Image (cartoon, rainbow over all chains, first blue to last red; front, side, top):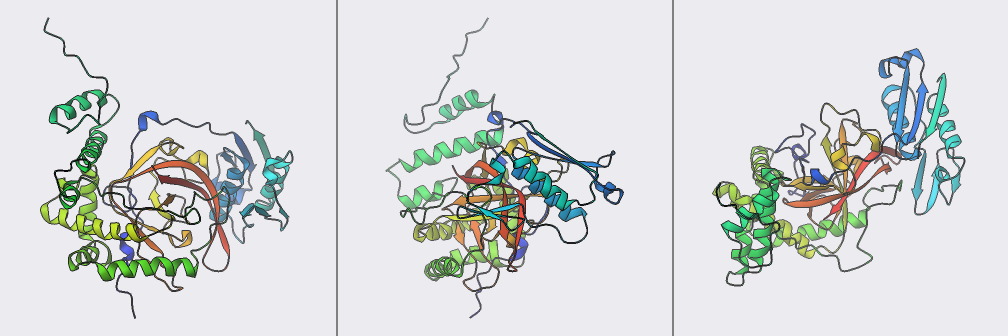
Amino acid sequence: MTDQWIVHPNRSALGPDEPGHNGHYRTLDTAATSTGARGLCVARVLLPPDLHRATDNDGSVTFTGSTWRFVVAAARSFAEDFTDGPVLPPFGINDRGQWWWWDNTTTDYSILETLDAAEHVRRYLQGLFPNAAAIDLADHR
Amino acid sequence: MGAKTIRPDRLDIEAGRITERDVKAAREVAEDVMNERDFARLATRIADELRDSDTSLTRAARDRDRATPRDLSHVESDRLRADPPEPSSFRRALSGRQRKVRSATKQKVLAAAPASQLQAARTMLTDEDYAAWQRINRQLHKGAGDVHQLSEDDRKTVQRLDRLIQSYERDNDRTHTVYVAVKLPENYPDARSDDDLPDTLQPGTAIHFDQFTVAHHNLHETPGHDNRRYLMFEITTSRGMYFGRSDSLDDTTHVLPRGMPLRVVGADSAPYDNGSKGFSEHPAIVQLRDS
């Protein structure tokens, strides 16, 4: 039997952030809101000319985050939107305590919490952007 | 020089029946840190709590007079109570068993609901015409969630849908994790990292859904999951009503109640089931839970 109680998709259709549109919310305690530190982990990638439509004027794009995890996810998201062809899998997935990494390795700990974290990040960014002229990493934590 | 007025520095909300004078005093205390709507919301919440303690009114009268619906949700079992997902954990699609359990509760609630509540659900949720949904939600937002600022007909529609959702909350025994997208303001960069999230969505911030909200259990099914001009909220809550299907079709809709307070608990880059036997990744999800 067909279920007649199906919410019409127009109720959750994408649209402006304004009163009456789905998902509109209000922040309550703006006075108590603190600005977290930004740019703690930084990766600057110098990209080839065919990607300069999406870069800063010097041909680079900078990915930042509070941890390396956010940096690699931001880079992958950028690659999905602006590069052609298949994109590497997500950097890592935590599945019930087991970590599955993009290069088909697994560990029971996060490799981004080891002393080699930056080198893992660099290798992943090289895979995402094989024609990058330079990759600079900085950890300000 | 005229006589000075001593300004109260706090409001004792447990002192008894709230009066216009108490509200005025609270307004003076709060006006430096709150805007008008925030203050209205606080006043209605206090009034709702005091009304609940007034034994001279029937439960039905207290419910009718409340500005926002009472939270009837509960999760007794530790096994069925859930926290927000662990960092970087794989967001699975809702299993067939989980869909069936929620759908069975949905069907039971709908079968027992009076015709007036079903008509409210049609008007607000299932009819193709969504003019009432937009108008009522807009007014709820502008009235800081106070249903008594709506017209009589709209108030009845809202409170009937409230009661349908409350029936589900009463029968439901488990926590939900659901998703809803919110458009980024134009002056913000694409949201690809926790660094890109607005200051107003840092951990600890309280937000409020004055309106009804349509969310989904499956991230891949949520409009905006692959669009970086939209923020994705991941809400862990026992509130709301499942309106999805029980079968394998992609429909895990979940309607959240109006007047719902939430708190930001974190952000995460989230790998998730893409619904095609593969996985995708959302780079910066905002995690919230009931407050």
